[in-house]
Length: 163
Image 1 (cartoon, one colour):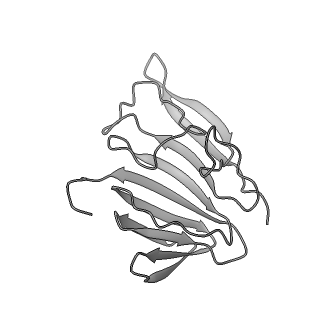
Image 2 (cartoon, one colour):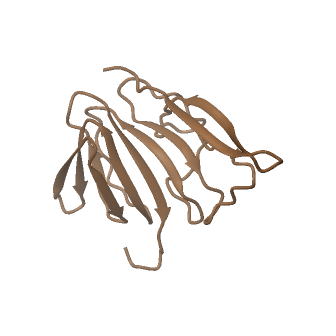
Image 3 (tube, helix red, strand yellow):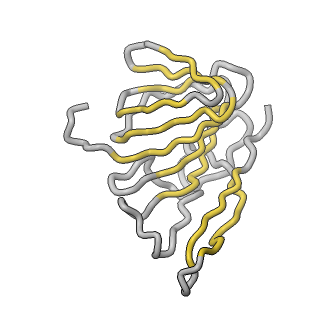
């Protein structure tokens, strides 16, 4: 096992003339979302988050400066934002049953991981598999020996539907 690799994030934007520019090009270190307080870099055997980008609203205003939300304490999903996040699942960590009021598009970037629903039904997800998570109670369980990396896009959902 080793520490999760950094994630390169390139953000484009516009200058005062309206021309396309590279606004940011940085390496993001996964942080441990389970520790209280200021995020700390994830260590070997821990879960790691990289909040790659969060929009300022829906729709987003591409003319305004963007806010870097990486390494900040943020909710998993917000009602007025879209979030792009990388999650590293260390082997052997117990999965946590949870639900978000969102539609989550999850892509397994590497490895193999179990997606368990609250009724006990399990699907094994492998590299390049995609899940559309529609507000169900679920857990991610890495039963393998290597860290699994997934990419998630979280879109807020209507909270009025009883869940």
